[in-house]
Length: 140
View 1 (cartoon, rainbow, N blue to C red):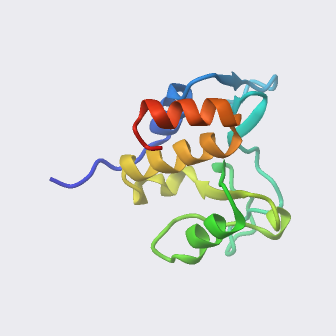
View 2: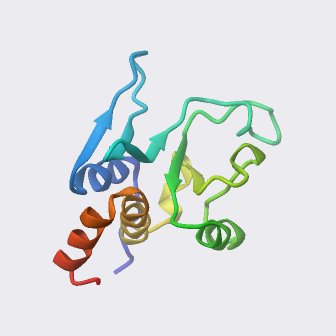
């Protein structure tokens, strides 16, 4: 049986399922939430920006999701593996995050997406919260 493909609904479910998460909604009526732990974002649904565009048409991507990572090494591992749908733009040089288009989430399994979002949460949570979560999940 093939692994379940990741979907946008999974991003929301996984992010909201982490402890101490706040979901921040925009005032403009768009469904582009920001998920935070302790006031720090770890998953962010971006508005269309000039740094992420279709190379053929020049149209701004309207489905980009930013996910924090632990380190530059983690970022480089994700974006340099051509099998992964992650990317970055010069705007994010030096920023501990990767970008992915919602339309490409299905290239990941739900389990892969879960691990990436859990790692994003861990990279932004306080040491106490991260240690507690890792111990509860026997990952420490």
